[in-house]
Length: 245
Image (cartoon, rainbow, N blue to C red; front, side):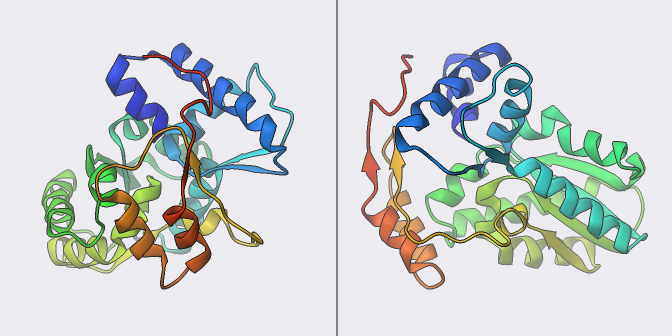
């Protein structure tokens, strides 16, 4: 959630977000990408606004479409299921997911949303940390108050890329709090179906948070060693795109 972080630090409005993301996309041209995949809900929402007047010279795919389609399918397959959208403050406030689902015929009454501020950074610094588990447990206790009736089945829309790192916590604490079957809708998995890469490198304008490089490398090592190696050898380029606070 790079734009979200910048927005919080410099009080950036929507026009500023769009301009900054345009600069980011223009800076990517030097890599000559075949495809750009926006693995961030906040940035995908910004791009949906930006693409109305700016078209980059390469194909761009955001995660919002994959997320909405996945949640729609899950809701249509089980008419008794309720959906809780989990995301950053900016993602939830955008109302993009509930809005798109309603356009596709899903009843508004079946959709609730819960902002989880600070959780993305916490998970990046250590998905298995006790603090991360405690945070998810607290959000489960907060979430159950949104429903004025017993829930027969709960779908959790993980509308922040980092939230999937805590999949076991979401299932454990939300099942305990709601007392019903809980199923995750993970847009990360939906977005990359049918996609593969021969190599992986990581380039960023900013350094990892304290402990984040080690935590993320350890998380990916068992299931995606190529990604783990890329994170371990991350390239930090402070001139990756122009921006001054």
